[in-house]
Image (cartoon, rainbow, N blue to C red; front, side, top):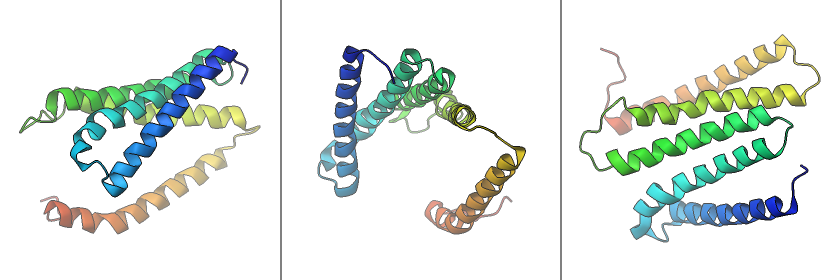
Length: 168
């Protein structure tokens, strides 16, 4: 990546700060070292990490012409996800019955098509040939993982939520 030394220094500083925040978040989640600050970590640090990741993707997209579209789309998806989390924390987190569906769901869910599109664009730009059989292989792998997750996670989710597991 060919960028100016100043931009490189700024990106390294943002990366170091983001890494420190990620370590603090992970340590708090794993060990509860600042259990009195759980709300702070959930409402500020977590969305801040997503904003940092999205910002880095956007900067990469604007600074480097190679794979620009993929990085801009991924950055936009991450920023939308962070906006959904911030909106939830600011307006709905302490409401007894938050509106569902809401703009929060739209912003959160915008990440998924953006990330899929970005990953497809990156895969396409980094391979010499992309045969239709690769799509089939990817679909088979995705369905296999989905089946395993459904098999292993369905009953614990039903037990945790007190549901019956039936549609009726």
